[in-house]
Length: 238
Image (tube, rainbow, N blue to C red; front, side):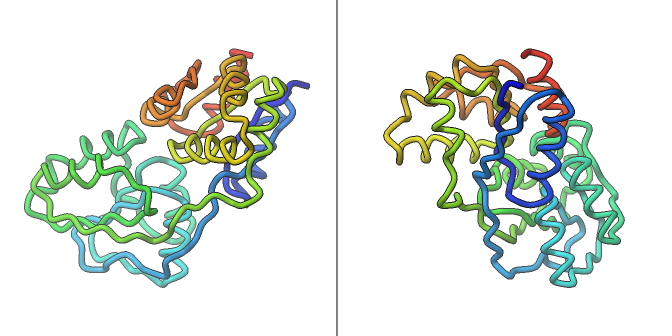
């Protein structure tokens, strides 16, 4: 079985990803590049619209006892499923699961309203700037920070040795942390060369742009920004 690497946080997301990769006939290489560091903040409760951008954010909001007063928007179906599982109603899901897609979905509704954006410390300004341009009064709450685990980097070593057949990058930050781990080991050039000999997938255009700006060739960008769709697309190319 050929090795396919991914960088999901070391929780049920990594376990689910490994199961998906095995089901596609490849050996999973789980190298978590993101670790959640909660800020103990909670989304505001007085907004007309509250935007959640991740399952992690939903879980932290629910643990804090957050109760929204207005409508709730999820950036994509995984976030929406997490909201519903936690007992929240979901009023808005964009057709395109991205910051750009969410801005386009809400643009005509938010002029003059208060919009709360609750997410990580690495959220794209595309979302907040776009909502402000649409006339909303935007407040952002950082629910958690995303840091690189100290032990991360096995995938960089495998890439440098030419042992990875496929790679799934699920955010710009996973690309950056992969390269940081390679830098620490003094194998960045070798790791990038190894990636460029593999099939590399990016979950969306911003992730692809980050990778390509750092010399990593992207072979696959799925139409739907979900890990399973990304992994299937990489596996098809393999």
